[in-house]
Amino acid sequence: MPVQAASMRADDPKRRVLKDVFGFDNFRPGQSDVIETLLAGRHVLAVMPTGAGKSLCYQVPALVLGGLTIVVSPLVALMQDQVAALRLAGVAADTINSSIDREANVAAWRRVALGQTRLLYLAPERLMTERMLEALARLDVSLIAVDEAHCISQWGPAFRCEYEDLSRLRDIFPGVPIIALTATADEGTRKDIEARLFAERVETLVLGFDRPNIKLGIAAKQDSKRQLLDFIERHAGRSGIVYCLSRKKTEEIAAFLEKNGVTALAYHAGMSKEARDANQNAFMTLSGVVMVATIAFGMGIDKPDVAYVFHTDMPGSLEAYYQEIGRAGRDGREAEAHMLFGLGDIRMRRLFIDDEDASAEHKRRSHGRLDTLIGYCETAQCRRQVLLGYFGEEAAPCGNCDNCLDQAPRADGGAQARLILAAMAQSGQRFGAGHVIDILVGHETEKILARGHQKLACFGSGVAHKKDFWQSLIRQLVANGFVEPDPGGHGGLAISEKGHALGRDEASFHYRVEARGRALRKMRGQEALAGAEGLDASLLAVLKALRLRFAKERQVPAYVVFSDRTLIDMAERRPSDIDAFAEVNGVGAAKLKEFGPAFLAAISAHRADGSV
Image 1: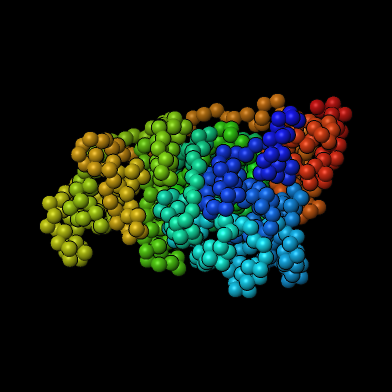
Image 2 (image 1 turned 60 degrees about the horizontal axis):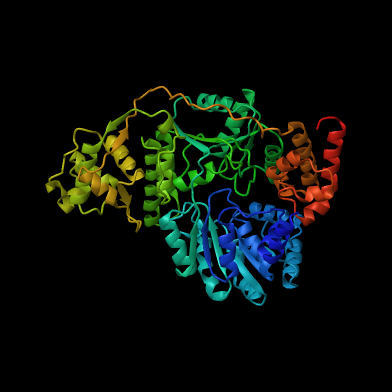
């Protein structure tokens, strides 16, 4: 190791922990800034893309600060996996939750009370009991981390009322820095988190949302199973995730793929834990496996070589879509995200929202989010521009989405758009799409008559087109930033600065022309190589098999032992002694001691066989 690098680590506690415990030489973009802010004692809201390494943002400062770090997480399975991974790295971590028997929970609390535990993972329901809060207040709590923080926001895509009570933490633990982390927060959600959890006394760090290596594509449903099979055949031999709306459909699609020669496994919350773990381990260990899953699959999964994510049904929002496609291409190689959508998806999503046990205001906001996603599906503009624009980022046309590569038929929609903008302006920019459309097509509804909107100059100006045409156009105007949903969540639409420019004929707007029965556009691009250049696939298979054996012995998912990134680095370096093994990316001191000899022996045996 270069002397300069060693001294740098010795002088920097966070870098020393990063290398000695977690086995990494450098932080990923944004991690160091977040950690420095926490170590300075300040609250942080960190919005980081999927795969950016959010966990290290609180795990590293937890070990630098000492004392106890409380981690709030919404999923029991994710908590248990993270605890298992930390323990294998030599970190004293525990979780107390309802899936563990009372004796194990009591033993875990005893370790916490004795000051032996560095990180304690709790669900919000368990943490926010008076008994737990009083007990924790007597301990040396140095840091609090709230994972999946969008759950605290009523505007977030996965609002959980149990998270609301977390706003009390800043008063119960004064002086303790709090970090909230999420990958899916638009500006409204961020503002809501800042107000609820931090009373707006927080530093918000937003990393770039762009994942330029992921090709984006969307197609209307025609023969969905055939469309899926054709897509997977273009990625033959590579791992991918197929998302379905229901548990039943995951089983059906997995069986369909198996019948057609594709190695496919199902994953959903209705399966036993043993079955889920077995399928997850197979996905992590074997090459070319397709995981067909509901959204129950994905959180905490560190598999960098996922070549594609395919949605057989629309997700619930752009945030959910962004998070799910982010599980592809984490190794930086070319990857693809493809979605099918149809009228049935839209109807089903509307029903889900209407049946939700939530306030009318929250439902209005959810319908607005769904409209934005539909607009994204329908847009004729660069998809990456629309997606990043939703999260507040500007971008040039990407050249790596279906609209850039093989443009759908488009038409100049400036004149029609100006009719929409006029109806919005004349009615006061306080109403939703339905009311605006009623004005355009001249429907004298009770609401129209009560407000006298039948007397507006624009009333009936859009009678030449049907409602569904205007609905699509409004969604595309929203998706492309000409029209903005009411930030207060009241369901109204407002004209943006960009929209005002369009109204003055200083900007252009083109919309997608959807022809019924139009053939699917031919997708472009060549298949990426099955593995990293120069990588010995047979050695990697040996290392994955050994990892799986250790995982089964310890009853943890395979990636908890070593990530795929670590095994790939191991196969490329082919270390021959313990010092060389210590330099493998992701090998910390504890894993070096526990697993080093076995993996070195496997590499040596493979070399002796003449395979390396």
